Length: 47
Length: 245
Image (cartoon, rainbow over all chains, first blue to last red; front, side, top):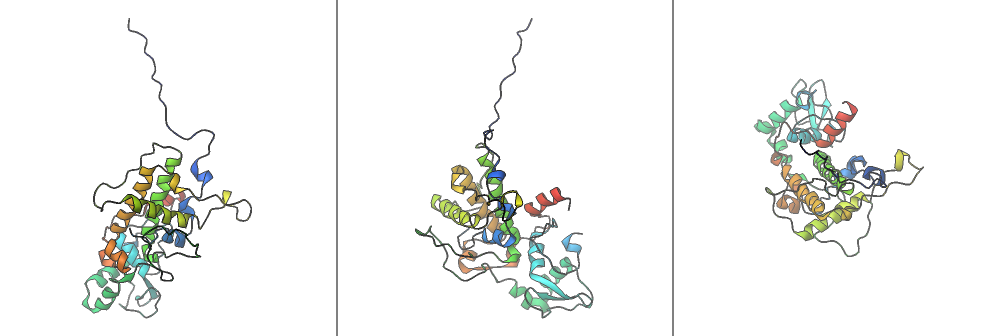
């Protein structure tokens, strides 16, 4: 009779349950205005 | 209807419009119809038509004409030397200033390069997932760009943070009610994510034909932007799928 198998324990890395996801903590860069998104490319700084 | 098949009117790349074509989208931003009945078209910010074909042209037809018609060589030339930066001219930044003075506006890309700005923005946005998962898979660029020194990573992250700090989103979308959410602190991201953001930014510029020489001269060419007819901006693709556009 084979030995009973055990289910391996897996840990999924992720956010501490006490901390809300980043879009609830910080401004979402994708939600700023179009001109600001173009400024965000910072064309005064080299690529 | 794909942009290629639309009659020339006025195109705003900042709107949610997943219409493909890397060069075509930039070109469409640079022209506008001044008389739909005759198909007369002018360059952006002017009202003097450079072509009056007698009937409306699609964006694809017009781009093909500008690319190949010797009579439009002057327009071809103008679109081959466009300003890379808008706003009051300021010295280029090659090091983090010891005492940065906040200004109302920093140089921005022209509207025709909205897709480039949005791609860089999407790269930042995707990198922020590392705040919630330190093992978030976020690769940089191994080939196709010049190596990025650590000091340049720090400079670019500083510059990106400068802009994120400028405009903050009010919590829950209520302007005037609750305080705005703080800007994401990019220097708190794992170093490999910061580096990947900067490497991707370098690649994005190259994808629009902009390298060190173009940055130094402050001039870019529409003709150095690959045609890339299948290209769809990730921001438009993402938001269109959410909003069913």
